[in-house]
Structure formats: C-alpha cells, structure tokens
Length: 274
Image (tube, rainbow, N blue to C red; front, top):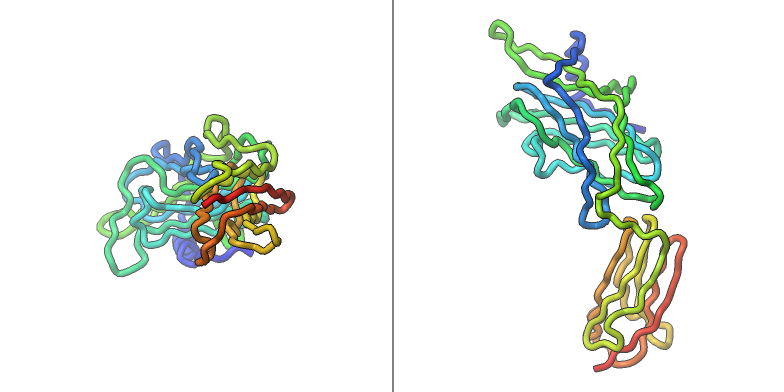
C-alpha cells in the first residue's frame, strides 16, 4: 500500500487551477552510471523556470531490476526540507516528493536551470537485462502525477502555478555502463595460496540475493563469517586475515571456505602457513 504524501496532497488540493506545459520545463532521465557496489544509477534531471517550490515525480520502471533507494546527495534539491521516496518494488512504482520549505527556516525556491534532482539506484536482478524503461504514471488515490509547482507573485500576492512537463517514457541502455555482470555463479581459488597472513577470496553472483561466506577448520567448525548480507549481482573480493578470526588467533593448517547464495553453494580449500 503506497503511503500518502500528506504535504504534496495539501499542495495539490490547494492548486485547483489547470496545469500547463511550457517548453522551458523538461524532465529527462540521464544516462545510466555504474555504482561502486555493482548498482545502476540513473539521475533524474529536470529543466525548470525560476521559483520552483515542489516537484511530484511518480514513475514506473521495467522488470528485472530492484530499486534499492533514491538518493539526493549532490543534486539540486539536496537543500530541500522535504525529500521523500516511496518505493514499491512489487508493482515497480516509485513516487518522489520534493518540497523546498516545510519548516520555519526560510529556503530559496529552486532557480531556473538544469540538472539532477534525484538519483535512482537500481540493483540488476536478471543478468539478461540490457535496459531500464522509466515511464510517468498517474495515480488517483492519493493523487500523483508528474508535476512542477511554482511559487510566484501576482499583483503582490502569492500565486501557485502547476506545470506538467512533457514526458511519457524513456529507455535507458545499460550498455557501456561498465557493470560487466557475470552470467554464472563462481567461487575462485583464494590467492595467494598458501598464504601468510592474509588471502583474498573472490566470487561471482549473476543475480542479487542473500550471500554468506564462511571459513571452517578441518573439523568442520566455523572459524569466521566474512559475509552475511544481501548483495547485488556482480564480482566480489573478500580478504581474510589469518592472524585473527572473531577475536581469536588461528593456527597454521588447512581451512575451507564456503560461499552460499540462494541458488549456489561451493567450497574450496586453502592453507595458512605461519
């Protein structure tokens, strides 16, 4: 159930005048970028006139990806009082609400210009996905549609104006992003091996999921858990320092490391020499 954006609802309730579209107002998702953890980042860029006070951005996105988060750091709206994102991955919908000022501290309206106002951070679940399609959507309960709200003065009085920028759908290609997503699971032989004191364990995930990476001794006792989290599809490396494991020193000898994911389990042997 999508949460109500009460502040935006108040704005929409007040602004009963018809919405218009002007050439100066544009909404254009930018070229996809690669994140540091294998994510795909799509900046949402707008072009606007002076006096922009609120933005309502309801979008749908295509299958095969999960929208992990919406970030605002480094964007034109970073200073806004209200920056909220309601993500519904079950229905592939995200609603972003932005309002310049909701507190008593004065904040300037967004001046005329172009640039990102939010960043969509996607996790690619299906390695065959080569593009992400974003499409504007309209919702009735609560009411949302792609809209800019301007705060302007008319004859000395505040006047609000709604503008609906032209945007229906855009397909953002993932080619050239540099993700290099693997097509199959794998667990590589650690290197160096034998090692002293540390070694690197590499593995590949063709799709996102819960992952654990554990080290066991020859008796089958778990020595340390190196990874226990949800990870995106991609290539990973984890370092194990054999001088210490879970606060306890470990001795020379043979150890086994095992990676477990939703559809994959593999174990390999390594040797610690001190």
